[in-house]
Length: 374
Image (cartoon, rainbow, N blue to C red; front, side):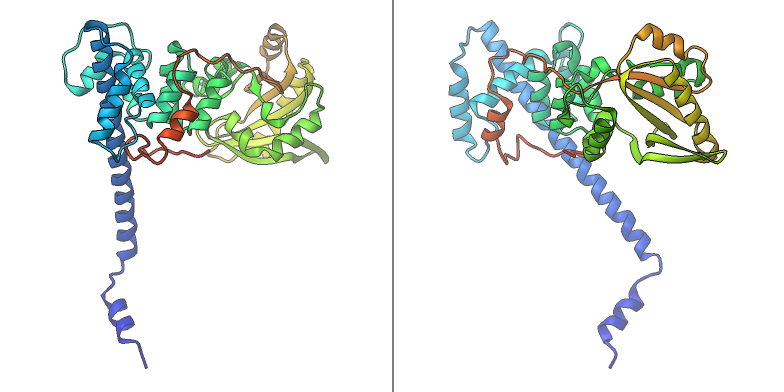
């Protein structure tokens, strides 16, 4: 006997229902992301305004440091369900107001403001980041570097761990620092984007290898830790293969590592050298790039670029070696051991202590519509 409900159900569903439902789901997800971002922005503004009030009263009216525990106690009494008003977090609010420029904040809030020094990181990136990201910026990054890390954290959807690691490994100083011939061989803006994609040096301390590790050991370890390797390479890299086989004129050749970059829309050949850079390495990489362009590159792909990763390099020798090459490539060092910078002295609780205090607090840990992969 036919199911009357099933018959009724199928007869009433229009043919374009599935398409419409998909569009509605997309709109709902977009609205949720915008709502979360708006809430996060309000939290950031609230925290800054509280910190600014305390800072101004301590400066102008002589409020002492002991006022913060009193504020925390009074706010907890007024809002017992909110953990964001601990004494530790209020200290961070004050620190945030002290180190984030007042004019940028006041402009966002529609308030008049006096002149102040140039921003060290502005409100626009700040209110797009969760509070703990801002705490990491305040406690881990140099004041002159905070704006750069804030902007890139928003653009790249960095998790807290990724933000912290990028600060500790000095990503700002390494980004775009590889020796390349991109300016001569790639048209703008492709040359600038490709340059920004490469680093020098690359940090492979996550492999757990000593400085005397052999080339094949490093390659094997990179594949075992491919997720961390991709994070170190940066946004846009997609892994294609290891020891990628090419056949040219009946002979076999093997590329160490082959990637595709989704933003550059081109293949990236990476050759790993367990020794210092030598000019003859450029000839080998140039050959691989020609073969990939001829055999693998699609009609819509841009020309392949190459990256030589060497244990050490003489930058003058590397610049000479690239001067007359016909294929776009870069040369950079890698480091197996990395010394971490000294932590900034802030006289504030650690991020771990603050996180333990504010765990699962809806006001202090508002999700935003960015990728928070570990």
